[in-house]
Image 1 (cartoon, rainbow, N blue to C red):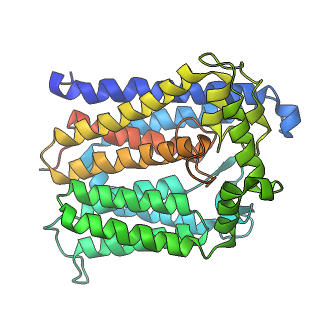
Image 2: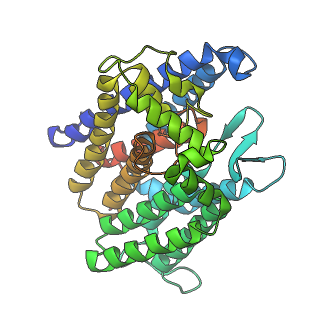
Length: 369
């Protein structure tokens, strides 16, 4: 039995995750009913693959929770290496998929998705395992915290080259949050965050892919053939949302005309078709998941466990909030999906593992000695 003082994070975490997963399946089911229009192989394509991914995510969550934090910390270098190799594989012809000017996706047989969520997960694990203030040195004599930061730099650079600037930003945030969990003070983290944000912005400005998205955001009327069309479509859906609290009904929203409504714009679809109540429930669920990560981190003494919980929470909540910001028109369209809800089998699987990570810290399972 889970002690009462540890039950609150799980009470916030599990129902919120189930609500988000159910919302994603619902949106995928309505999209599957239009499979012929989407050029899919069979009508229930999206919902079938989302169901399989969700089932695997549940298994990953239980598996991670059962392993315990001490084993996860030991496995951190291997998880990171596999995630990095997957991120590099997007550049391999026949394995990686290039679309809209970016190489972010993998497609191997029936498996597809972006490896970026696994990179953020791997970075969080690695920094938590090696980023402590008193780690054992590596075999070559270098301190492990320095190796962890070097490996984080390599991972972020790989994401930038794809280019996937939103994933790079999330990965940097996960590393910084993990360092904060390990006890690194704000006098180091705040300047480092500012420098990294500035550097990421400067690098991003050099990519034509990114410049096109900024142009569509600032001058959508002049970019109707590019991302400006989608910016205008999102604005039109927000301005003409006359259905209010209950929405216009599943499958009847104008946001369905966008390029990837079940992935990059799933929150806009939910807000338009299911209404403000459903949209507020989605945001509240993400806030509960973030609160669960914070509570789990506060209730453990070991800094590595604290870093694990905070890193997993950041890897989940940060892209979700970015996704909402895109859909409500606060930031440019940056191609970020919402974990658990968007149709992205790889992201759903990574989210399941991250939820299991928070749960194992909340339960105090396998605490390092």
